[in-house]
Image (cartoon, rainbow, N blue to C red; front, side, top):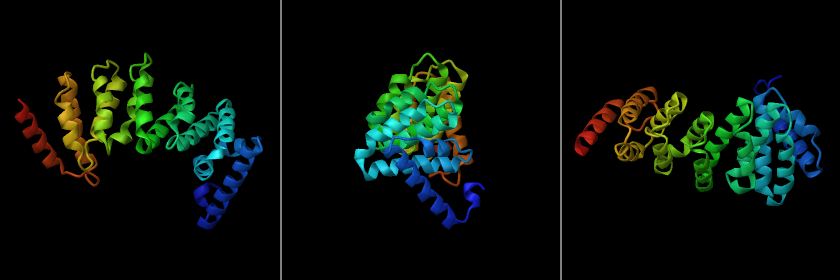
Length: 255
């Protein structure tokens, strides 16, 4: 039976069991339960594992080294679901101690399986929200990597921080404005749109965007900003009509 097919009280019992057995494995240097749960087909079972590891670390920092040792073993497993869970668990720790787990992202970013690479992106998002300085510094080291997928993943991974603090990631986005790869360019435009629709963000995005040299990309980005305020109208701070007028007036004032 799938995790969310269980009644709430049974889900809570299962989560407590997973946490107890996973931490027992980590403390006693074994992997029986860890491998079982990390390889589970149900994504919510795997999520229970990495959340339990993150909570255990926050409750007792002396568990860091045994946790890292166990996650290193998981990262070497052939099953991508297991490696994915290891990266997600590292992301939970990286929200507070990025330096201790950075090697998981250095490795996961180049994993052969997309689900592990996506776990790196997801971890970047949650870590960047809580612990942005080291995450952004690390992201910059891969910003111009020769592999276009690495550049795209880095661009995507810094998005969530930009929704609350666009000024933190706009310098990195600015550096990607002349990237010739279609997927990277699409992701860049997408991220600009995504960081524009929350309170206080549109103004910061436009102040930076009008300084960009690639005017063709700027035109596409502005179109995306306007469109996203319709697609996400229930969540946007401004109406699409206001955004259109604001952008037109702002650009006119700069010419």
